[in-house]
Image (cartoon, rainbow, N blue to C red; front, side):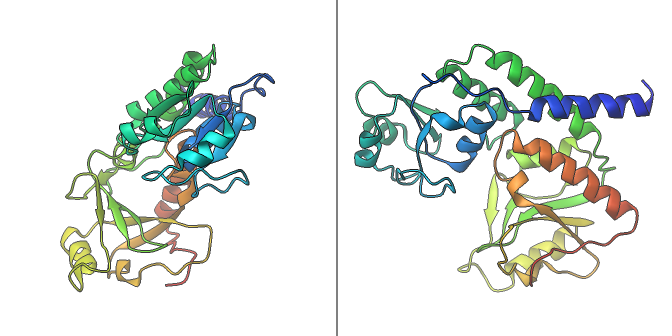
Length: 282
């Protein structure tokens, strides 16, 4: 297939997958979302107006229902939800205990690979009674695979870090972002499974020593849209720093399509000689 035609096809797939569904019927289920990434998924599925309560981490101005580890059963009960959705790191017994009589207490994943992201979207859609959920997720699956194939990592050695808003942490093997960047053609050189946190209680100089030992070509920094200072320890001689909008990567699900778009643009700029650095204070 000619490159120009393929690019048009990818653009059409992205537009189709990113387009919200029509508003759900007036009788949609009353939903409690216990994590922002679940809220994002619900909005993409056209169920945003069904949400009656959110966790304390959510930006939506709705009644709060506690946290991931400590859901507030009393607050949840007042909202009379029909469907409650939490991340799967909320203990199953805790989440079930917080559910009023008759409410479905669903737990979903999303942080351990793209297959889990797709399963999360299907599980939410099925629980909410969306008849076309399988077709929608199938289109999303085609779209993200097409988008990731267009990034062009070319085997560059990289790390993916969130280095703002507190202690830096790295995304390692078994995480959704490790898979996504690897599929984009990068060699993600993180030497750990899951997420590695470089907390304030760690050994002095731990992060710079680790970066010097791995010496990636690029550190992709997932930066906040707010103006926090990022950790200056990530600045190392000979290692390029390329910022990405963290909001497009930290919510596994539809937002990753925007993240892949950003990643493609960032690596094209890098290849053209534009040495980007994070747009935040160090």
